[in-house]
Image 1 (tube, one colour):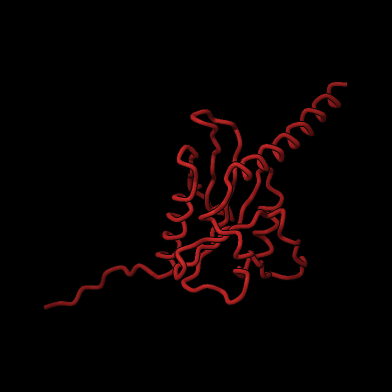
Image 2 (cartoon, rainbow, N blue to C red; image 1 turned 90 degrees about the vertical axis):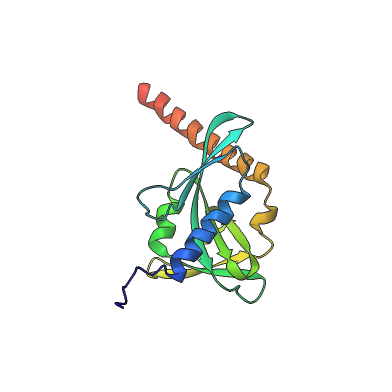
Amino acid sequence: MINKAFPVRSETHQLEELSERFFRNALPRNWVCEKPSADYGVDLRVDLFEDNNATGLELIVQLKSSAKATDGDAEVVRLSTATYNHLRDKLQVAMLVKFVEAENEAYWLLFRSIPAPSQDQKTFSVHIPKSNRLSTIRWPEIQEHVRRFTDTKLAATRKLEIVGQE
């Protein structure tokens, strides 16, 4: 009998899929979550709906995962400075989410709450408070934040358009 070699599914890939499943299951049922084909730090795009109506509001998500929890009151994530810069400069609201398999829980933090790293570092540590449990997130508050942020952006764009017409 000949032993055949087959592809192996790594623990990393399995954790990535678990984290994505957990995140999708935590969303309101009427929101739409899509995985971009090209990943430059944006793992998921979420379109926010009110009832069955599209709003034009969007949340972008960077997902991380680990098998075990970090000790203490915060989950620690190593994040590339380049990824931070890219997501922080996006026009959409960005969220960092870390899934912990051993706890079957994920923790979240908006990028606006992450202090800017030194630009001479390739990576840096982000501490996500364990009180920011994805299973207890208040999605209406996140949606309102996304709305305020988007409205501010649109108001600035309209002001630039008016100035450009003068």
